[in-house]
Image (cartoon, rainbow over all chains, first blue to last red; front, side, top):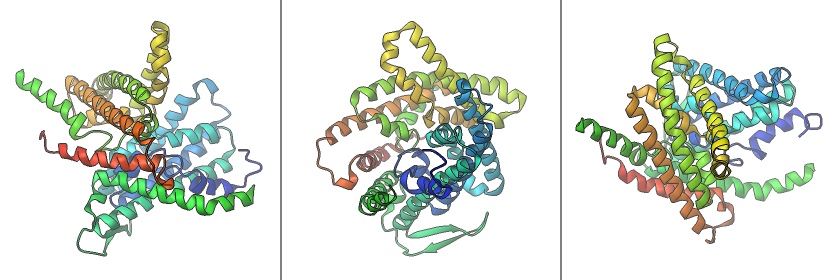
Length: 217
Length: 197
């Protein structure tokens, strides 16, 4: 993938559709199931990853000329864990109720293969603008996947949708008062939901995207 | 003393069955789906993972209580733990290559994968958060390792059979693996309430 021939927009879209972290690459799956039984948690987790991914890509891209290739992995890990610590502290300060539920998973963003992989494969070889577009795309793709999964799970499992209306406020929309398919908000349902959504994504992809990708090549 | 032993046993059972990392805490999923295609790789990964898990739980406990707590820099725990794990993995890689090339040939590849496994980072973080003692941390590490191994081996045996089944096209591969995991997780919820700690 050379940065000259691909535009920033394509880089951005690449992360959302073609290389969607969860549905396509099946990486960073832990939070996609752990925090997605509630739309609000899903959205905040997605935002945290979006932030970390973009900042890490920018930092690595800025540092790429001074990093010794032999020690690059430990340095990447340090950069990532630095940004994760910052995110963790910000979330603990601004959204304490979300942090109480997803705190452990925020810390574990450090071990996300996808973030390290983008730093290694993309940001360490490209200049700052493409790296930022790539980070944003990957992050938005992740946010999109988490939102889709948590939307599906909360709606089907509890019949409600919890939308954040601000940092500390939220609004719960209730669609049905009974709990239609309680299993979806239970741990086990997370796997089922991701499996079903992944299959749906595959199905859509084979049906529509094939034509589109033929067009661009 | 006997009472303490029972407590430790309970901790191991709870970490491996009731709060199984894969099925109830959803950690280590990337590795879980990545290496559960074949029984052989699943067993190799299980052995390597459980041993590294215990060593890293012990090392992180020592550094957390003897260095981070006295210096009051516990907010650096993520950076320090990931450093310990990366160092440990690198060290065991080198040592294994020198001492036992045969074993290295078999298990070396899993070693490299371990540093991207979230469980290995989650265990020290939980140990620190719950303020476990040294022995408890070790027990928790062992329990988590065993739980992960159990999950991997169950999954690998199912996926080997699944190869022969006729699965609808969009569900082939990972989506089906997810649905199967969901069903196993459902079975594992039966363990909840087995022991109340």
